[in-house]
Length: 389
Image (tube, rainbow, N blue to C red; front, side, top):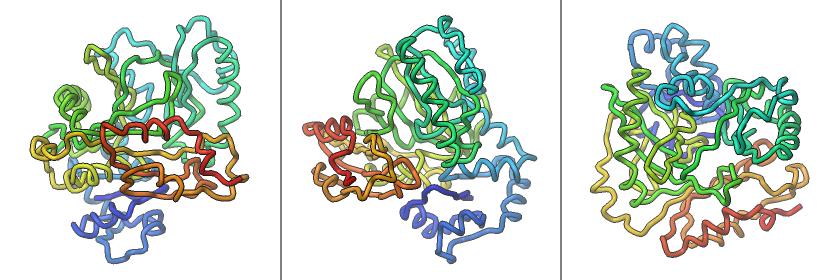
Protein backbone atom coordinates (compact mmCIF):
# COMPACT_ATOMS: atom_id res chain seq x y z
CA UNK A 1 0.00 0.00 0.00
CA UNK A 2 1.01 3.62 -0.50
CA UNK A 3 1.19 6.20 2.28
CA UNK A 4 1.26 9.62 0.59
CA UNK A 5 1.78 13.08 2.01
CA UNK A 6 3.31 16.49 1.37
CA UNK A 7 5.45 18.04 0.08
CA UNK A 8 5.21 16.49 -3.40
CA UNK A 9 3.74 13.61 -5.39
CA UNK A 10 4.88 13.28 -9.00
CA UNK A 11 2.50 12.63 -11.89
CA UNK A 12 4.63 9.59 -12.72
CA UNK A 13 4.00 8.08 -9.29
CA UNK A 14 0.27 8.77 -9.48
CA UNK A 15 0.08 7.20 -12.95
CA UNK A 16 1.96 4.14 -11.71
CA UNK A 17 -0.51 3.73 -8.85
CA UNK A 18 -3.46 4.12 -11.20
CA UNK A 19 -2.21 1.69 -13.87
CA UNK A 20 -1.46 -1.00 -11.31
CA UNK A 21 -4.49 -0.35 -9.09
CA UNK A 22 -2.14 -0.17 -6.10
CA UNK A 23 -3.97 0.60 -2.82
CA UNK A 24 -3.55 4.12 -1.43
CA UNK A 25 -4.38 4.97 2.17
CA UNK A 26 -7.16 7.55 2.09
CA UNK A 27 -5.64 9.95 4.60
CA UNK A 28 -6.80 13.56 4.51
CA UNK A 29 -3.30 14.64 3.41
CA UNK A 30 -3.23 12.23 0.46
CA UNK A 31 -6.71 13.17 -0.73
CA UNK A 32 -5.82 16.83 -0.50
CA UNK A 33 -2.86 16.31 -2.83
CA UNK A 34 -4.52 13.95 -5.33
CA UNK A 35 -7.77 14.92 -7.02
CA UNK A 36 -8.23 11.60 -8.87
CA UNK A 37 -10.95 9.74 -6.94
CA UNK A 38 -10.74 6.70 -9.24
CA UNK A 39 -7.57 5.43 -7.54
CA UNK A 40 -7.78 2.39 -5.30
CA UNK A 41 -8.37 4.38 -2.13
CA UNK A 42 -8.63 2.33 1.04
CA UNK A 43 -9.90 3.67 4.37
CA UNK A 44 -7.31 4.20 7.09
CA UNK A 45 -9.05 1.61 9.27
CA UNK A 46 -8.71 -1.00 6.51
CA UNK A 47 -5.02 -0.16 6.09
CA UNK A 48 -4.44 -0.64 9.81
CA UNK A 49 -6.25 -4.00 9.79
CA UNK A 50 -4.19 -5.14 6.79
CA UNK A 51 -1.02 -4.41 8.73
CA UNK A 52 -2.35 -6.35 11.72
CA UNK A 53 -2.97 -9.39 9.54
CA UNK A 54 0.42 -9.32 7.76
CA UNK A 55 3.72 -9.71 9.57
CA UNK A 56 5.70 -7.80 6.92
CA UNK A 57 3.28 -5.63 4.91
CA UNK A 58 4.67 -3.88 1.83
CA UNK A 59 4.42 -0.13 2.45
CA UNK A 60 5.89 2.68 0.38
CA UNK A 61 5.80 6.35 1.28
CA UNK A 62 6.73 9.31 -0.89
CA UNK A 63 7.35 11.46 2.18
CA UNK A 64 8.73 11.12 5.67
CA UNK A 65 5.78 13.21 6.85
CA UNK A 66 3.90 9.89 7.00
CA UNK A 67 6.13 8.63 9.83
CA UNK A 68 3.73 10.44 12.15
CA UNK A 69 0.86 8.33 10.76
CA UNK A 70 2.86 5.12 11.18
CA UNK A 71 3.81 5.92 14.78
CA UNK A 72 0.21 6.73 15.64
CA UNK A 73 -1.57 3.87 13.87
CA UNK A 74 0.92 1.00 13.61
CA UNK A 75 2.40 1.02 17.11
CA UNK A 76 1.39 -2.63 17.49
CA UNK A 77 3.99 -3.57 14.87
CA UNK A 78 7.79 -3.33 14.81
CA UNK A 79 7.65 -0.83 11.94
CA UNK A 80 7.97 2.36 14.07
CA UNK A 81 11.02 0.88 15.80
CA UNK A 82 12.71 -0.02 12.51
CA UNK A 83 11.98 3.43 11.11
CA UNK A 84 13.49 5.14 14.15
CA UNK A 85 16.70 3.11 13.94
CA UNK A 86 17.24 4.70 10.55
CA UNK A 87 15.64 8.10 11.04
CA UNK A 88 17.50 8.88 14.26
CA UNK A 89 21.14 9.17 13.22
CA UNK A 90 22.42 8.56 16.74
CA UNK A 91 20.49 5.30 17.04
CA UNK A 92 21.71 4.31 13.58
CA UNK A 93 25.34 4.81 14.61
CA UNK A 94 24.69 2.68 17.68
CA UNK A 95 23.18 -0.03 15.45
CA UNK A 96 26.31 -0.33 13.30
CA UNK A 97 28.89 0.41 16.02
CA UNK A 98 30.18 -3.18 15.92
CA UNK A 99 31.03 -2.74 12.21
CA UNK A 100 32.78 0.61 12.75
CA UNK A 101 34.12 0.49 16.33
CA UNK A 102 36.55 3.39 15.82
CA UNK A 103 34.10 5.77 14.18
CA UNK A 104 33.61 8.96 16.23
CA UNK A 105 30.16 10.41 16.82
CA UNK A 106 28.54 12.35 19.64
CA UNK A 107 24.99 13.43 20.34
CA UNK A 108 24.38 16.95 21.58
CA UNK A 109 21.31 19.00 22.46
CA UNK A 110 20.64 22.35 20.82
CA UNK A 111 20.88 24.02 24.23
CA UNK A 112 24.40 22.63 24.68
CA UNK A 113 25.88 23.96 21.43
CA UNK A 114 27.28 27.20 22.81
CA UNK A 115 28.92 25.48 25.80
CA UNK A 116 30.38 22.53 23.88
CA UNK A 117 34.05 21.76 24.64
CA UNK A 118 35.06 21.93 21.00
CA UNK A 119 38.76 21.41 21.76
CA UNK A 120 38.07 17.76 22.52
CA UNK A 121 36.76 17.15 18.97
CA UNK A 122 39.04 16.62 15.99
CA UNK A 123 38.59 18.85 12.95
CA UNK A 124 37.10 18.63 10.38
CA UNK A 125 33.76 17.26 11.53
CA UNK A 126 30.15 17.24 10.38
CA UNK A 127 27.28 18.51 12.48
CA UNK A 128 23.67 17.81 11.51
CA UNK A 129 20.26 17.21 13.11
CA UNK A 130 19.98 13.75 14.62
CA UNK A 131 16.62 13.59 12.82
CA UNK A 132 16.99 15.45 9.53
CA UNK A 133 16.14 15.75 5.85
CA UNK A 134 17.34 17.42 2.64
CA UNK A 135 20.73 18.62 4.00
CA UNK A 136 18.97 21.11 6.25
CA UNK A 137 21.13 22.13 9.20
CA UNK A 138 24.13 20.17 7.87
CA UNK A 139 27.55 21.82 8.17
CA UNK A 140 31.16 20.85 7.75
CA UNK A 141 33.34 22.55 10.37
CA UNK A 142 37.03 23.02 9.55
CA UNK A 143 38.31 24.94 12.58
CA UNK A 144 37.46 26.74 15.81
CA UNK A 145 36.71 30.06 14.14
CA UNK A 146 34.22 28.42 11.80
CA UNK A 147 32.56 26.70 14.74
CA UNK A 148 31.87 30.05 16.44
CA UNK A 149 30.04 31.22 13.34
CA UNK A 150 28.24 27.97 12.48
CA UNK A 151 26.98 27.27 16.01
CA UNK A 152 25.25 30.67 16.05
CA UNK A 153 23.93 30.10 12.54
CA UNK A 154 22.33 26.79 13.56
CA UNK A 155 20.57 28.42 16.51
CA UNK A 156 19.18 31.15 14.24
CA UNK A 157 17.92 28.59 11.68
CA UNK A 158 15.90 26.53 14.12
CA UNK A 159 12.65 28.49 14.07
CA UNK A 160 12.65 28.84 10.27
CA UNK A 161 13.16 25.13 9.62
CA UNK A 162 10.57 23.99 12.19
CA UNK A 163 7.84 25.66 10.12
CA UNK A 164 8.60 23.60 6.98
CA UNK A 165 8.57 19.95 8.13
CA UNK A 166 7.13 18.08 11.14
CA UNK A 167 9.43 16.93 13.96
CA UNK A 168 9.33 13.33 12.67
CA UNK A 169 11.11 14.54 9.52
CA UNK A 170 13.53 17.11 10.92
CA UNK A 171 14.06 17.84 14.60
CA UNK A 172 16.55 20.55 15.50
CA UNK A 173 16.45 19.99 19.26
CA UNK A 174 19.24 17.42 19.07
CA UNK A 175 22.25 17.11 16.78
CA UNK A 176 24.94 14.61 15.99
CA UNK A 177 28.59 15.53 15.62
CA UNK A 178 30.59 12.95 13.69
CA UNK A 179 33.93 12.63 12.02
CA UNK A 180 34.22 13.71 8.41
CA UNK A 181 34.10 10.66 6.14
CA UNK A 182 36.56 10.73 3.27
CA UNK A 183 35.72 9.29 -0.13
CA UNK A 184 33.11 9.76 -2.83
CA UNK A 185 29.46 9.93 -1.85
CA UNK A 186 26.76 7.74 -3.39
CA UNK A 187 22.99 7.45 -3.00
CA UNK A 188 21.28 4.10 -3.44
CA UNK A 189 17.62 3.22 -3.97
CA UNK A 190 16.81 -0.33 -3.03
CA UNK A 191 14.28 -2.57 -1.35
CA UNK A 192 14.42 -5.75 0.69
CA UNK A 193 12.07 -8.32 -0.82
CA UNK A 194 9.75 -10.73 0.99
CA UNK A 195 12.67 -13.05 1.83
CA UNK A 196 14.97 -10.21 2.96
CA UNK A 197 17.16 -10.10 -0.17
CA UNK A 198 18.31 -6.54 -1.07
CA UNK A 199 17.41 -5.42 -4.60
CA UNK A 200 19.25 -2.35 -5.91
CA UNK A 201 17.23 -0.10 -8.23
CA UNK A 202 19.69 2.73 -8.76
CA UNK A 203 23.09 4.04 -7.65
CA UNK A 204 23.89 7.73 -7.99
CA UNK A 205 27.09 9.67 -7.48
CA UNK A 206 26.46 12.68 -5.25
CA UNK A 207 28.75 15.29 -6.81
CA UNK A 208 30.06 18.26 -4.81
CA UNK A 209 31.58 21.51 -6.01
CA UNK A 210 34.34 21.39 -3.38
CA UNK A 211 35.44 19.68 -0.19
CA UNK A 212 33.37 22.19 1.79
CA UNK A 213 30.17 21.65 -0.15
CA UNK A 214 27.38 19.75 1.67
CA UNK A 215 24.51 20.64 -0.68
CA UNK A 216 22.27 18.31 -2.71
CA UNK A 217 22.70 20.03 -6.10
CA UNK A 218 23.75 17.15 -8.41
CA UNK A 219 23.20 13.37 -8.36
CA UNK A 220 24.30 11.34 -11.40
CA UNK A 221 23.93 7.72 -12.43
CA UNK A 222 25.54 5.79 -15.28
CA UNK A 223 26.43 2.34 -16.55
CA UNK A 224 29.93 2.73 -15.13
CA UNK A 225 28.65 3.56 -11.64
CA UNK A 226 26.16 0.69 -11.54
CA UNK A 227 28.70 -1.88 -12.75
CA UNK A 228 31.45 -0.70 -10.41
CA UNK A 229 29.51 -0.58 -7.15
CA UNK A 230 26.50 -2.89 -7.46
CA UNK A 231 28.11 -6.01 -5.94
CA UNK A 232 29.87 -4.38 -2.97
CA UNK A 233 26.81 -2.32 -2.08
CA UNK A 234 24.55 -5.36 -2.31
CA UNK A 235 26.85 -7.23 0.11
CA UNK A 236 26.78 -4.28 2.51
CA UNK A 237 22.99 -4.06 2.35
CA UNK A 238 22.72 -7.71 3.34
CA UNK A 239 24.48 -6.87 6.61
CA UNK A 240 22.10 -3.99 7.33
CA UNK A 241 19.04 -6.05 6.39
CA UNK A 242 20.02 -8.90 8.69
CA UNK A 243 20.47 -6.56 11.65
CA UNK A 244 16.82 -5.48 11.58
CA UNK A 245 15.20 -8.38 9.68
CA UNK A 246 14.11 -6.10 6.85
CA UNK A 247 11.51 -7.56 4.50
CA UNK A 248 9.18 -5.78 2.06
CA UNK A 249 11.06 -2.64 3.04
CA UNK A 250 12.21 0.16 0.68
CA UNK A 251 15.11 2.46 1.60
CA UNK A 252 17.22 5.30 0.24
CA UNK A 253 20.79 4.94 1.49
CA UNK A 254 23.66 7.41 1.36
CA UNK A 255 27.24 6.23 1.79
CA UNK A 256 30.83 7.25 1.18
CA UNK A 257 33.25 4.87 -0.50
CA UNK A 258 36.99 5.47 -0.11
CA UNK A 259 39.81 4.58 -2.51
CA UNK A 260 40.17 1.13 -0.97
CA UNK A 261 36.48 0.40 -1.56
CA UNK A 262 35.49 0.64 2.11
CA UNK A 263 31.86 1.61 2.57
CA UNK A 264 30.83 3.89 5.42
CA UNK A 265 27.11 4.75 5.58
CA UNK A 266 26.03 8.33 6.10
CA UNK A 267 22.36 7.63 6.61
CA UNK A 268 19.51 5.35 5.58
CA UNK A 269 16.05 6.77 4.91
CA UNK A 270 13.20 4.30 5.55
CA UNK A 271 10.07 3.45 3.53
CA UNK A 272 11.03 5.54 0.51
CA UNK A 273 13.47 6.22 -2.28
CA UNK A 274 14.90 9.71 -2.85
CA UNK A 275 12.78 12.55 -1.48
CA UNK A 276 10.43 14.60 -3.64
CA UNK A 277 9.97 11.63 -6.05
CA UNK A 278 13.44 12.24 -7.46
CA UNK A 279 15.65 9.15 -7.61
CA UNK A 280 12.69 6.75 -7.80
CA UNK A 281 11.38 8.53 -10.89
CA UNK A 282 14.83 9.01 -12.46
CA UNK A 283 15.30 5.23 -12.61
CA UNK A 284 12.47 5.18 -15.14
CA UNK A 285 13.81 7.98 -17.31
CA UNK A 286 17.36 6.62 -17.19
CA UNK A 287 16.90 2.84 -17.27
CA UNK A 288 13.23 2.06 -17.85
CA UNK A 289 12.97 0.76 -14.28
CA UNK A 290 9.71 1.64 -12.54
CA UNK A 291 11.03 1.47 -8.98
CA UNK A 292 7.55 1.51 -7.43
CA UNK A 293 6.36 -1.43 -9.54
CA UNK A 294 9.57 -3.33 -8.95
CA UNK A 295 9.15 -3.00 -5.19
CA UNK A 296 5.50 -4.04 -5.00
CA UNK A 297 5.86 -6.83 -7.55
CA UNK A 298 9.20 -8.09 -6.22
CA UNK A 299 11.01 -7.58 -9.55
CA UNK A 300 14.80 -7.62 -9.72
CA UNK A 301 16.45 -5.56 -12.51
CA UNK A 302 18.36 -7.43 -15.19
CA UNK A 303 21.22 -4.98 -15.11
CA UNK A 304 23.25 -6.72 -17.82
CA UNK A 305 20.42 -6.24 -20.31
CA UNK A 306 19.40 -2.79 -19.06
CA UNK A 307 22.91 -1.35 -19.35
CA UNK A 308 23.61 -2.66 -22.86
CA UNK A 309 22.53 0.60 -24.51
CA UNK A 310 23.72 3.03 -21.80
CA UNK A 311 27.44 3.32 -22.57
CA UNK A 312 28.75 6.89 -22.43
CA UNK A 313 25.52 8.31 -21.02
CA UNK A 314 25.03 10.12 -17.71
CA UNK A 315 21.61 10.74 -16.15
CA UNK A 316 21.36 13.40 -13.45
CA UNK A 317 19.03 15.06 -10.99
CA UNK A 318 19.64 18.78 -10.56
CA UNK A 319 18.31 20.07 -7.24
CA UNK A 320 17.66 23.80 -7.57
CA UNK A 321 18.11 24.66 -3.92
CA UNK A 322 18.10 28.36 -3.16
CA UNK A 323 21.76 29.07 -2.47
CA UNK A 324 21.53 32.50 -4.09
CA UNK A 325 21.66 34.50 -0.88
CA UNK A 326 18.45 36.21 -2.00
CA UNK A 327 15.51 35.87 0.36
CA UNK A 328 12.45 34.24 -1.17
CA UNK A 329 10.21 37.23 -0.48
CA UNK A 330 12.51 39.42 -2.58
CA UNK A 331 12.32 37.15 -5.64
CA UNK A 332 9.91 38.21 -8.38
CA UNK A 333 10.45 35.18 -10.63
CA UNK A 334 12.76 32.33 -11.57
CA UNK A 335 13.62 31.94 -15.25
CA UNK A 336 13.12 28.23 -15.89
CA UNK A 337 13.39 28.63 -19.67
CA UNK A 338 16.84 30.18 -19.34
CA UNK A 339 17.83 27.37 -17.00
CA UNK A 340 16.80 24.67 -19.48
CA UNK A 341 18.91 26.32 -22.19
CA UNK A 342 21.98 25.35 -20.13
CA UNK A 343 21.37 21.66 -20.85
CA UNK A 344 21.65 19.84 -24.16
CA UNK A 345 19.05 17.21 -23.26
CA UNK A 346 16.71 18.11 -20.37
CA UNK A 347 14.18 15.34 -19.74
CA UNK A 348 11.90 16.61 -16.96
CA UNK A 349 11.40 19.96 -15.25
CA UNK A 350 9.51 20.14 -11.97
CA UNK A 351 8.77 23.55 -10.52
CA UNK A 352 8.39 24.06 -6.77
CA UNK A 353 6.81 26.91 -4.84
CA UNK A 354 10.02 28.55 -3.62
CA UNK A 355 8.06 30.84 -1.29
CA UNK A 356 7.03 27.77 0.70
CA UNK A 357 10.08 25.49 0.30
CA UNK A 358 13.78 26.45 -0.02
CA UNK A 359 14.05 25.02 -3.54
CA UNK A 360 13.06 26.31 -6.99
CA UNK A 361 12.54 22.87 -8.48
CA UNK A 362 14.20 19.81 -9.96
CA UNK A 363 15.51 19.00 -13.43
CA UNK A 364 16.29 15.54 -14.81
CA UNK A 365 18.86 15.66 -17.60
CA UNK A 366 20.77 13.33 -19.87
CA UNK A 367 24.24 14.17 -21.10
CA UNK A 368 27.35 12.37 -22.26
CA UNK A 369 30.68 11.80 -20.60
CA UNK A 370 32.14 14.28 -23.11
CA UNK A 371 30.05 17.26 -21.98
CA UNK A 372 30.30 17.16 -18.21
CA UNK A 373 30.70 20.95 -18.30
CA UNK A 374 26.90 21.19 -18.07
CA UNK A 375 27.03 19.58 -14.64
CA UNK A 376 30.08 21.60 -13.58
CA UNK A 377 28.36 24.88 -14.43
CA UNK A 378 25.14 24.21 -12.53
CA UNK A 379 27.06 22.65 -9.64
CA UNK A 380 28.97 25.89 -9.09
CA UNK A 381 26.10 28.27 -9.84
CA UNK A 382 24.42 30.25 -7.08
CA UNK A 383 21.42 30.50 -9.45
CA UNK A 384 21.37 34.32 -9.33
CA UNK A 385 21.59 34.31 -13.15
CA UNK A 386 18.04 32.87 -13.26
CA UNK A 387 16.51 35.07 -10.56
CA UNK A 388 14.65 38.32 -11.06
CA UNK A 389 14.75 40.35 -7.86
